[in-house]
Amino acid sequence: MTGRDGGADLHPIGNSPVVVLVRPQLADNIGAVARAMANGGLFELRLVAPRDGWPQEKAWRQASGADRILEAVSVHATVAEAVADLQHVYATCPRPRHIIKPVLTARGAAAELRAVCGRGLRAGLLFGPERAGLDNDDMAQADALVRYPLNPAFMSLNLAQAVMVLAYEWWSFADDTPSRTLMTNETEIANKAELENFLAHLIDQLDACGFLRNAPKRPGMVRNLRHLFQRGEVTQQELRTLHGVVTELAIGRRQRGRLESE
Amino acid sequence: MTGRDGGADLHPIGNSPVVVLVRPQLADNIGAVARAMANGGLFELRLVAPRDGWPQEKAWRQASGADRILEAVSVHATVAEAVADLQHVYATCPRPRHIIKPVLTARGAAAELRAVCGRGLRAGLLFGPERAGLDNDDMAQADALVRYPLNPAFMSLNLAQAVMVLAYEWWSFADDTPSRTLMTNETEIANKAELENFLAHLIDQLDACGFLRNAPKRPGMVRNLRHLFQRGEVTQQELRTLHGVVTELAIGRRQRGRLESE
Image 1 (cartoon, rainbow over the protein chains, first blue to last red):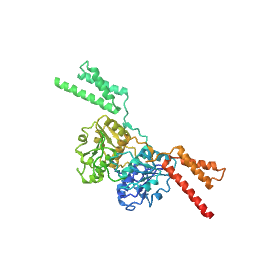
Image 2: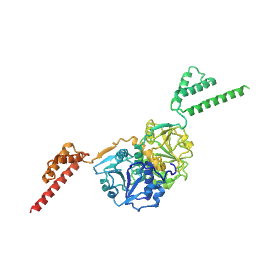
Image 3: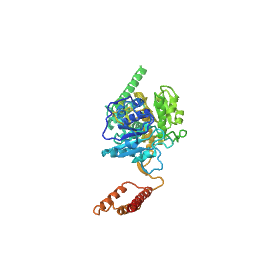
Image 4: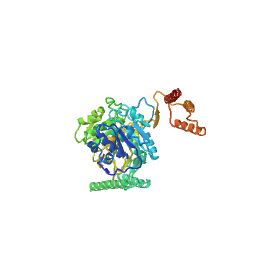
């Protein structure tokens, strides 16, 4: 969406989960995973038996500045080695079968990870190889599985997208931005008196130009205009603009009237 | 995460939002966007002035089977033309400035889109070009902006990742999977009597082998074992395995005892 920024300093925040890519195949994906991790505030990446070895220059090209994550990558021979120092391990798995295990949504996993990390415990997230996903032995090393709610008719999820969804949920859990707000910058949302003041100006000019001359219809027409301007939050700046619009249109009409009467 | 599947039939579901890519630069990204859309149950893709023209073979290679979406793509000269038949338009924008506009989180936008689409209205989601994002004129055509809660120290979000997050939120809104459940397949979660029956078996064998011979410590040791097995949901299948484990260990001990006494 935008160019690179903040590559050098990604602002790590406290104890966050480790991302473990198990037998990843494509260096491009490893780079894209690092970028997604930085987006969501995850900073520690471990690789188990990457197919083409490590480091790979291609990864840096896809990381879009999340270099610090790639530079700190550790490589491990087995999942057991990669998770040895962790207390909790969650394994992403789109279609688990023949296994007895807790299954969490991505949001549920984020909530548990926040709780676990908040207690000072170290947690890890396992992601399987691009084509096959995690195998049964990988999953047996996890406390719980994570299965995203996604279209069951099309479950082919890119590796970096899988990391993105969990990183996004991890970040979102701690975010308290209101789901809808009005961005107003330097101006403020008008109060009802300011809105009424504009409506009085508008109606005054509409009376003057004859737009409201039909007396029986006038109350309904005024009400409809009022409904329209009451529908959303109007800012003081927008009201100033609207006052100007009405004034200028009225002056135009008066001048035209003067020209026609000359 | 897994190989391709369901490419031919992506199970469209009712009225869902249109994704509009404004001046996209890379065909790879357009393909990855189609894949992310299919993951989240979005099916209609429109392009405004794609830099390298359309169609582009590269897009199909990144779509991982979401061909139906690419084949139905429409190309438009302007944003106005691309959104002409829509009633609601939301524009994704990581850092809006100097603009008076409602701003939604991705989750807030998904909730509104569900409501709007549920009323039979057509909605669209604008995504800007990879490097620059949407410009001010693009944003002026939207009802509201969407800003994801993500790490402000690293906002560089890949185009397909941006689509993925909203597609995921769109799907999640209508999903009611419990945030944590225990997958048990054919077996069931044991009740307390079944668990108690196993604990009695275990304690009986531990008494027999002398593990609990320290009488003052015995109650606490038994309680600790009880705490451990009560901690999570144990299934009937797991209890059968545990019964077998205890029995076989005890037989092993008895045989060893017999060998030693011979």
